[in-house]
Image (cartoon, rainbow, N blue to C red; front, side, top):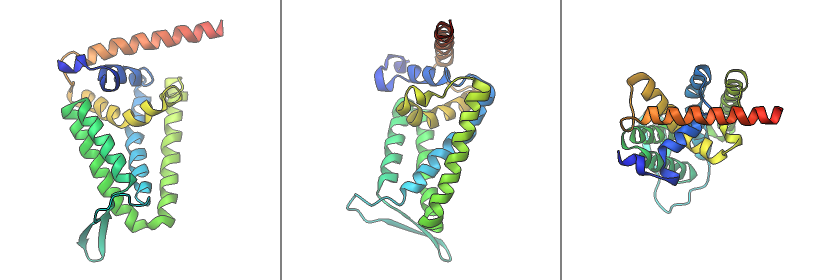
Length: 206
């Protein structure tokens, strides 16, 4: 139950309640589960082409034939590291799984980026980002009928979203909770946040 004592940056209940209050519609949730991780993956892919800033040798991996890829110590690695450590610190089990997915995205995107090259990679990333972001805005506008969280808290929305869609999926499919009672506590906070938003919306209309 130690997680309940966490505050500030590591207050998982507060973060998840904030996210959940913007994602209560099942269709909008499904859209985010589908599109959030591709956004992270494609962002890491394009960061593969940023300059190396660690004075460390790159790792060359040869698969078969002429296929090989290089892991570069650049911003792609740094973002992966920050996300992975942060997720694991929020919840050891689900966070470690999210961290593993982040590392997998880094490795796979490094391979794909090397095969595509810069000229093609940025075009692929642009298409993926546009499709995924448009899909999410449709989810909010058509189904949630509430502006996305990034308009209120950009950093929270961008950093926390991949972990939260994974946590949402784990809870839905396997009934997973970081600790007993987490889901009911967060759900109560979500409902309170939504009610507060509805009341403020009514005040603006009137």
